[in-house]
Image 1 (cartoon, one colour):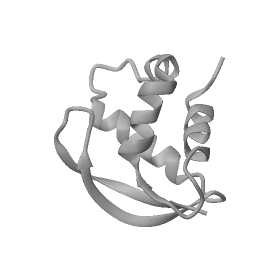
Image 2: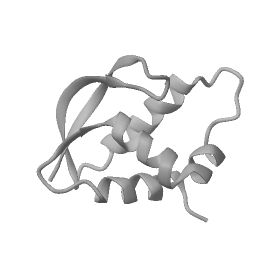
Image 3: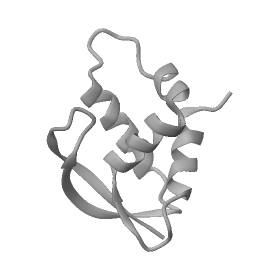
Image 4: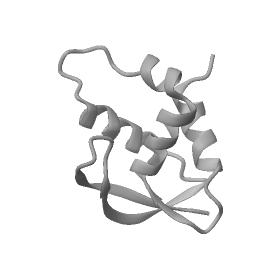
Amino acid sequence: METLDQAILSSVMEIPSGNIFDSHVIIKMLLQKHSDCYLREMPKKDDCTTKTYHRQIADRIGALTELLEPAGTSCSFNIHDKLSQCKCWKRK
């Protein structure tokens, strides 16, 4: 059974080297290609909001330091079609 970390890695590996992307891109890829994993690993606590879960995903993306380097922040549409700030990375 695929873990969330494996799904994140798989998604990041699809980004061509040298490109900059934000966490919303990876979250959308998780929802489209790894939705069962995304839902299964979502914390079941009442106080875990979508924003909190997506921040945890962004932290896991950022942990892939061998593949990525920080590239600031962006303002892009989240899964609720609202503009929000999120972290960016450059694929090495």
